[in-house]
Image (cartoon, rainbow, N blue to C red):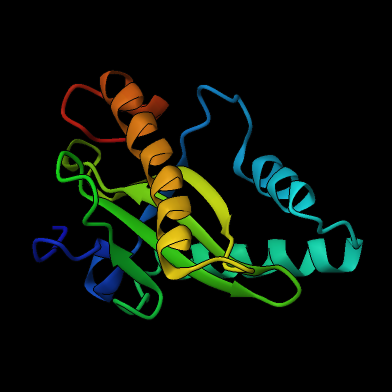
Length: 165
């Protein structure tokens, strides 16, 4: 049985392992690896070594998600901006890349599944705290929109009528 306190991700309690992480790719049609690599390249990361390191760091964080060993606040936190959806963000600080944010939900109907909705590199250079927050809010709104879009298809995750794999 999946355990979770309201406002806390399932990935913060090892009793919930193993979890599944599913990337919702409708809209842009790209898998997480391709979307992540393109996001890095659009943000000026072209060195193959740095790209490989960043992909490895993301993979490690997703392993921690599926093992339910993420620490609340340090690794993962709830997004309060949109009360319609219980959105979370996985936080990463990557060498040579910067701050990366991966937004996801944990819909009850899917059980032990987290659904990745959006990922971006958090821009903090030459901006006020207010400007940084405004830029991040735009990214959170993208995740919320994708959450709403995917709701009626269970975010393209294969389930039977009981919400099980």
